[in-house]
Image (spheres, helix red, strand yellow):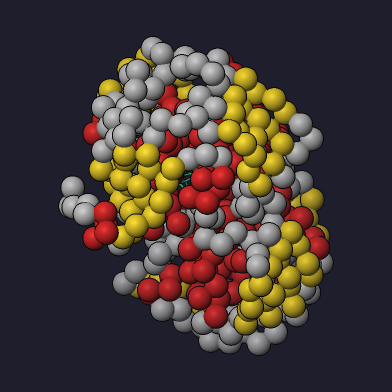
Length: 426
Ligand code: EPU
């Protein structure tokens, strides 16, 4: 098992070219099976969730090769209808293949999905929508068995604007008979990216990025080339790294509007935020002030930035209040920040944070992807050395985090726990 050893206390300065978006790329990879022919995806992040997804796709006859961030994908020879549990369980978006594979193959057997343990994360909206479009789905001992003759258009009203359900149902509907309308759709940027990609393959979609999306079904989709946009969550993490270390970091190659919610909270906390056409810079030369955060669907404060932001607020001046409204248990970082000398009190989905002058290096463990990022940020700001265990969570969604942080002046290295002499049971 690897750990990250972070020596804190150095302000970070410089620029980061932000890698492609994990969540956008995962959604594209669920939909790639809708088309036949070759698809080329560029700027694909080299993170473990993508590798897991590709291994699952392989089981359905998808062939691919990968050259420095570009994926060449061939879906001409789809085959099979069952997936191994161990290829499905590690990531939630394995489930988003159900509709697209069903549209192409007519029947499929897919174990229930996994993913980071941050809440119950049901798939009821996905199932209801697919059933409305004509799928017959049964759950037997944790495995979904599904069949369809041909999907048909439907009026689907989502009870909550789920990003995943919107993506899954929108992509499946591209090959349905007739028109599908999704009401109360998610307006997260990754939904818009997916719609742009599907349109490139020949789909007819209107309204992505609004709460009502209409999909006019077509008979087939082809291949095409598409660039995965920059990852707004990796970008936000590097900007917070600048702020928490009282340095100045510029995230490049991004859409600045995606950082609006995080940027406005950083401004409120006393940081400087500058915005260019495709970059955002955050600078802080003093201890930042406490703020109140409430996570909301886009364009509100993103749940995925809640844990990294909490790390920053752990050292802010005054009392901050963080409320998580999307997931029930996205709080594994709280006890670990307290191990580092933080003063955080969690009640249900709310965390009260009495900012401390400095955190102290300690051995801490990531409980999920963004908790891992939060602990690395805390380590960058802390006195002494922080050792972050369970690095595999961070590797799910951060493309070479260490190298990028080192390029900004951080002292951080990956070692095995044996080398570092760390006791993993901590
Ligand atoms: N929900 C339901 N029923 C459903 C689906 C969702 O009740 O059938 C609820 C969820 O329990 C949650 C809310 O709806 O309370 C929102 O979930 P959503 O479906 O929007 O999330 P997701 O598609 O499962 C994606 C990202 C998450 C990110 C959320 C919100 C991927 C692979 N994951 O998840 O990213 O937090 O959207 O933006 O795209 C991460 O990258 O760390 C991560 C967890």
